[in-house]
Amino acid sequence: MDSENIIMETKEKNPKVISINIVRGSELSETARATKGISRDDLVEIRVERNSPAEPKIMKLGKNQSPTLRFKEALKKEGFSGKKII
Amino acid sequence: MEDKCVFIIDEEILNKFSLLESQGEGYYEGENAQLFFEYLSYRIHNKKAFMIPSIYKKITSKLKINDGESLAYFKNWVKEGDIGESSDTTEEQDTISLFETLEVLHEKVFIISDKYEGNTNFRNIPVLTMDKLNKYLKDKKEFMKYINDCFYGQGY
Image (cartoon, rainbow over all chains, first blue to last red; front, side):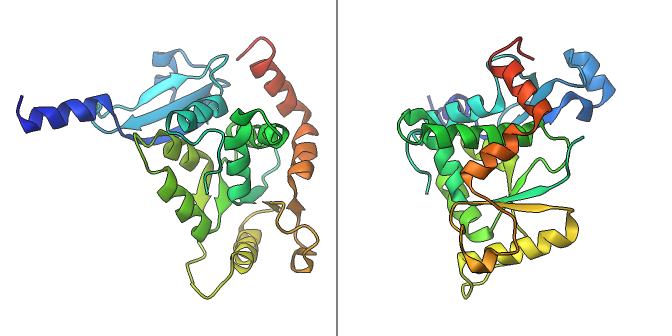
């Protein structure tokens, strides 16, 4: 495996999250709501990742997927859980 | 009906949120912090809290690791206050500058911090300590119903 392939593989395993936006379904276009089966009141996470297709990932947040629980999991995964950030 | 206030926060609320997992003394305040971030997500208007640049930069440089997921969540809820930067000013002065700037643009501005309680420079500024924040959020009946449904009830 050459170095270029190794780099590609590493990036695929560790996608860089560019942005996360948590919005109400009402903030999405009607087309996006209809395509993804999202109601106006649903909470939705829009995630953009480097090395992923240009289209952002739109995910309806259901039970036990509250934004703060997901943030808590991310902090835990990155070693910040249970300690002060600064 | 949702109020259109904005919030200025500092590192305390994020630190308290990250201590939530510890299950120790900080658990209650960690839950307060969690409730606050849920409230920002729930809102339609002003879904981001403001932070003075010096603290914002410290936090974002610390969270800029691995795949950047926690940084992306942080930026979903918090934005850097546009007050410029000066090495001559203190954190307290920057906080007051940010408050005065936002006060012109928004109908109500709250500072959330335990740092300034009893500080006479903040006499005429609405400061919510973590305890006051808890009461402020729990008084919002529709929001608390939403939280109960999400975490303990039928789900959303």
